[in-house]
Length: 120
Length: 190
Image (cartoon, rainbow over all chains, first blue to last red):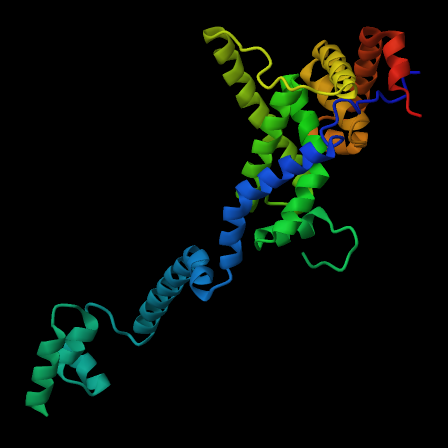
């Protein structure tokens, strides 16, 4: 006897079809705003906005990789902070201020350009 | 909604609803309304409150559908929301009841004799359910009202299938004792 299910028809919220439809309509109405926003989510702007976090992460990753790569290249070329800028200039065929600019941030780009113009 | 399958899976429906398909959301609501109601009723023990909570739970679920990480497990996720909403409401109701007198039935409507009988039988069922624990109510309602299997119940309520069977056995036994034989005859399916 205990294997027979209990009949909960009198508590079933879907038996009163009209009342149930009202509930479903109310839910649908309440959720219509978010549904509309999702439908509008197909525009390129929203697509990019949704992917802003992964995009920023990817850009940061590329930046770190680039920095690491540049450092490696500089070390491979035998260029470091102790290398005299004259040697660098000779190797690169550039002016001393230009080589200083490449090795450090002490010389400004303006200095490099002005000096380059004077020597050539 | 545009799917080739006659009965789209929960995962398909969730994917469509995430793209703003209102019809897909509608199907999800219709598919799990009774189950969510069963869970809410299990916690609250009151039909009207359970319906209100159930409605709120669906609105919240559709609003936060992106949080459903595994769309194929929409049902357990939905039941968790329904239970949490019901628990919050339960706490709120207890506070309210201690601070003010609870009004009598707010929306007393004139109803035909059939509706009165239905309401009375529903009230007797509610009273009988009140004698069970929350988890017993959830299990028996999900199983007997919405036809869930023990496997589904175990997954949704985070218990073993054996435990689900035990809860169902005890719940049915207690309900039959409380409802009595005349009531059981009225409930017998034709």
